[in-house]
Image 1 (cartoon, rainbow, N blue to C red):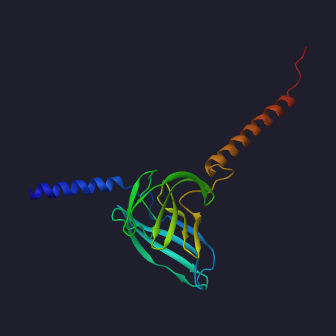
Image 2 (cartoon, helix red, strand yellow):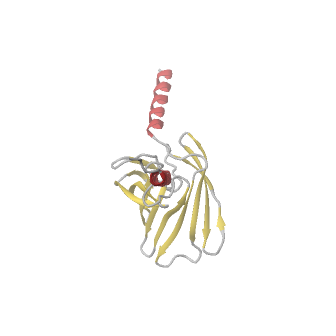
Length: 214
């Protein structure tokens, strides 16, 4: 019975882990601008960057760099655990969730994804999931990139202040050019140049060809 209990526990744990998808890798990073509607405290964050230091299973070590209005910085390091609901203050959730899916936050309990939509962040059109939840007296409206699980925007609403964190730089994806991925855009440019060169060559060759004799 003891071995059976241990085996069942291992199987349940493995099943739970398998359901949690991690969408980031070591070296990934993302930056945010922080804006306010209302009057923020005298010392308030104006910009932030989060870097992925390591990924082991569902454990993700994060290093944040927060810049404040007085010119100072803080660089806290923390370890998120998606299985245990330690989400780095909402920075990262399981990847590839969709509308109606639920994930666990150790501070807020179960949070349900309200929907999926397309939005532009850091120069690219991304598929994002969103949810609304409360942090004490503050209401949070958050959006995460679907394929990576990384926070791309959060609006924090209180009685006197609205704070907006929005991603504007990252190496998780490339900025688009005229709505296209850079590789697709440059491939089309090269193809167009090649076609023009071939047409020009044929026209010049035809003009230089001697006229046929009677």
